[in-house]
Image (cartoon, rainbow, N blue to C red; front, side, top):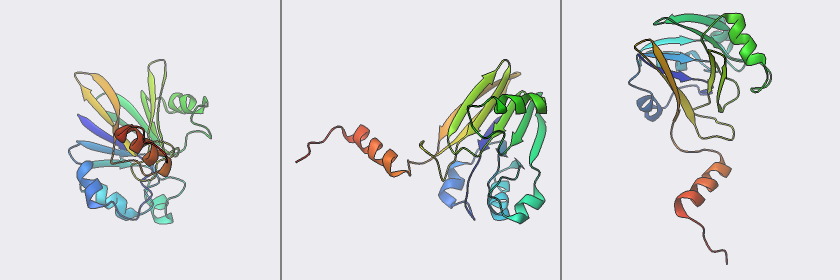
Length: 179
């Protein structure tokens, strides 16, 4: 099974070019800050969708979606939450995974990819495909096959932060002489 992990889309609608990039998954897990129910509807057209509300969501989204969700995916206990702790490197993320009693905790809010392990538990923030913070736009891909789970961060589009665009230009084009 191929699952897309996504968070912090922060748009009223998902652009068609981004929808095309996000296709080909058996399931989508969204860790909050969809902003509007239209984004939920857009993502639902791509396949089975499980989502939670985030701190920036419209009240309609907050009424329609839970703040926490726990699902079983082929024997893997998966928790979804938007903001598990005030800091991505605090023990709060691992504590939330233990509290929810999940093998994998998918969380959002930080707008950059984060991957942590605590024993056999995995915690992942897929970043943001539309408004990243000090990272390229991203999502994550979870593949479950033969009772094993593998996880990877997936770049989505090109950097949008001016610093990252400058750094990419230097990397791709090499150093330039300054007159």
